[in-house]
Image (cartoon, rainbow, N blue to C red; front, top):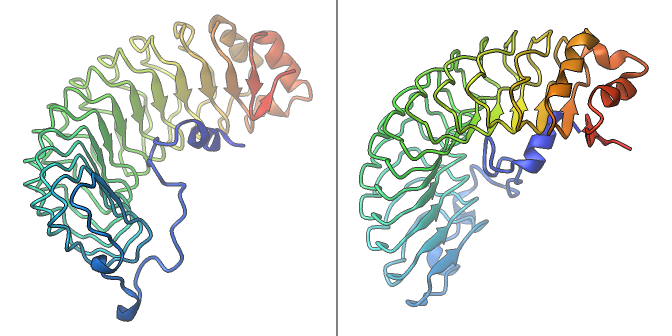
Length: 329
């Protein structure tokens, strides 16, 4: 198992909350006669608080007017093109529209109590029309066609923002998200770590699979416990002096030749450095400073071709529990 696979096992929300879930057969464009009407699959009970219509092949949101007590509405894996007919659901706390055919965020103004909105895997080009949702805690917009981070200033209560797998080139317009603890921006086109200073509560930052060449501008993120920077063009481990709470550091698939500048990370448990250019055992030996280190990935580095690779690594860090994907004996 690669380090990135390991991450998906341990961090199912990282870089897409549900990216590993399979799409149903026939998702996407289908013949008109195959589209199901909501009235044919839902039993109206005015007292119900939760409706799950996942995998329903539903083409339109409609006929929900009697459900005034509804708190959770799940419409994953359907054929919905438009967000509509939800105005009366003012008690709604969670709305999932993952994997549909929605092109625009709209008609959500009355859902003022909404705490979680998932519109991942759709066809959105823009973040907009969310200003009324001031109670939102979690917003999932991964796997769309969004190019700009914008129109989020009112989200002072937001703790999780998922924008992985879009077309974003710049980290910006996040200063007002003072409650944010988890930010996922993997699989975009971002070239620089910047404009994060105000996110002092951030615990998890994912910037995997971007176009970064340098670790920088993380000084204010003193509460960071997880940092994912795999699949970039980073050449050096640096500028982590203030990130002393880091428990997981993912630098797999970069261009790093030396393990350095992490001795001060006393809380570090997971260190993923597979697929880099580490060739000197002297820098590997420095991992002995990280007394809580449990897992190290160094496969597909030059040092890993040493016939005594595992034995040497275990001698350097005797308390290791796992080397690459294999438990230590």
